[in-house]
Length: 462
Image (cartoon, rainbow, N blue to C red; front, side):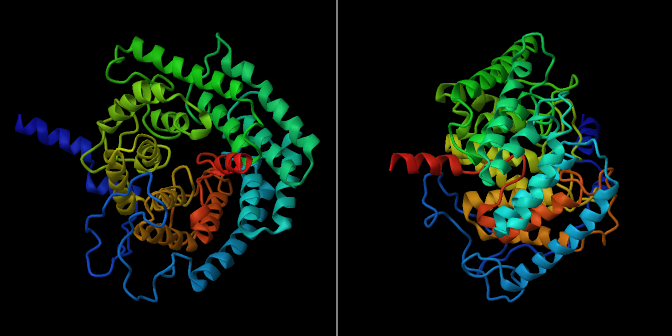
């Protein structure tokens, strides 16, 4: 029995050598609040706390090396370093894109991702040249849609949604509405009863749902009718209920999903990404459904956590190896944070904080600097946790991962297949660096949504 247990632990924890192969040792000291150690416990905030009253670490020691000021604004020195690096990387990216696949229009590895990056740079800098550059890419993309896939990241929904937003910002409403109309026409594929479409984010219904919610948060809450969103949400929920019934897990996990015959856990292909999308306020899922179907399913996933605080790539995988947004803690953390916001239970935030510690220790990846399975994507988890807690420790950690990205190419990382793309390569690192400049407004591209819908509603009601 003792021998069996030790073998199981070896499988669960993975060898230290294997972890070392996947990630660099983190060379940075962790954030030190004044008068305490970095590992000191933090009082949990409540989701209803005002921003001013939310818990944060005690005032940091006076240290010129901190990348932000006492009011959490990025220091002028660090701001300048990031701005300079962004310009440098943009030049490299544009040069490299000259040899990129002209037919890849996806947000994940293709031209929509580049349009999304320039839209982000416009959002941060308000420079019209960035919006114009985004429009240039959008025009090119919309001429080459293939109609084979329907999601934001890997299908036509991404180009159409980004096109609608860019044209809207350019005050070209006719072109924007045409993009929206074409996007809504994809719904028949998503809802088709004979469809073998999965439910996950990259290729499935949740990826289409994100495109709809993106329009309603970026343009107007009524851009996509609520009836359309409701039908897509219901199809995702019914699919999860049916598969759970097939697997005889209705009591333990009422909403269960698979992709390629595996029950994936993470954000890209798994339950964390699907649950996260269903919990978005813009999805308008009924409270009863959230409590009776989503909450127990999230708890089921929580109980699959490794002793390290990381999560498996799939329910059948007992190896603690991957610390990526697509597989592992950097994706699951977003589900946990949203669950904390929705259900107001401290256990979700505690688990999210454990994820953050795993990412801090093992998140400087040898795979590269990208968003899907790289340092930039892992860095976004800290920014999101900073939004939620206002704890400067997480802003500090995000800045340190950005500091790592400032030495882009110097660490001997693997070169990705699409080295200049948004989710695999350089464009993703640029996106992350630009969000460090305005951390209070940052959001993981093609995943996190803007809070604009709430603001629009408040304006209408005032």
